[in-house]
Length: 439
Image 1 (cartoon, helix red, strand yellow):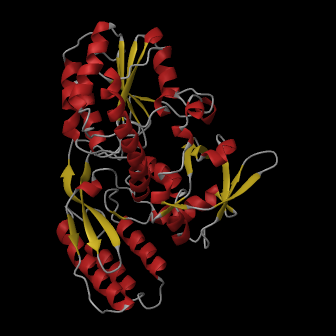
Image 2 (cartoon, rainbow, N blue to C red; image 1 turned 135 degrees about the vertical axis):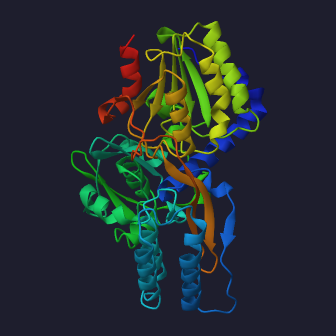
Image 3 (spheres, helix red, strand yellow; image 1 turned 120 degrees about the horizontal axis):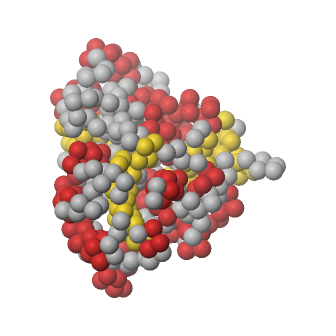
């Protein structure tokens, strides 16, 4: 394999900046994945509830809940497309009646449950909190495995999760389900795995009372580990397995870098592999320049296959991808089903869905992978209602995007490839293995 560094990324200064960007991106992905809102959410306009001076706790909660009850239906593109107005008002009134009886964390959990019943994955309450465990989980088939962690727990990499604080994975799914903002099974699967990293959702669901919790993994004998969470800012100083060179070599190719976008030319397969993790621009290396670099190599190497991987792309600005789409259309030798592959999955969301749909409609690409976490026709363009008195962010959709006449719950690939733990932990990617088997 021949690894390209994209013209050295403007040497050492840019390299340092990219490391910082990589850490920030990782933290943002963890944050927004847990709440169902991805990278574009924080960039949109925020409306704040009026701040009450010298008010007690009950008065603050009451004022903010009434504000949300009034304003969310006005600001959401169509809040009542699934949930009726009567049921929404009834649930909000019931919640208002619990202000004096419930704790802050109970009220936050109940509010999240009500907002999630809207059934729009872009509309949710941020319940992730500020405490995170240095772990990363992923569901392969029906089981949950540890796919990332701080170096302290590296011996647990590849182990199947059996329980958290004594609750089995089956019980955990049932307990966390009301707090998952979802459109379909794919995003529910992804968000469940992500919520296992955060103390507050586990607290809300009744899984954890204390910050230190016990994760139990499959081993001989079973391995139970007590782990304390870190504040978000502290995680910047903790090295994870996917940031450590020796450990990264064991990861499949798509997980060997966390940059917003990167590429690798696979010489023996005559394949250009492009990982597109965010519909955004790196200031020092715009996506338009990245596109030029990719296709210079495609042409000079006479690449026979192009693989564009959207699996970890949670969205952003769909227009960023346009230069890349134009370059594909110029090349008849690549714009064929057996030569052009677009990889999608449970983490493909929002603007990344729009780009995948553009490729499906505008090229001869074969879509491959898993059903997407986002819907082809979906609410989006996220904005925020900030409940100032209780410090809670409510994300909501201000627009609706219609890309197809058929209103499906997910973008389904032409070729569905189940992801197996045995492949991942032996350094193989099931999707790429399938593509290379078709040569």
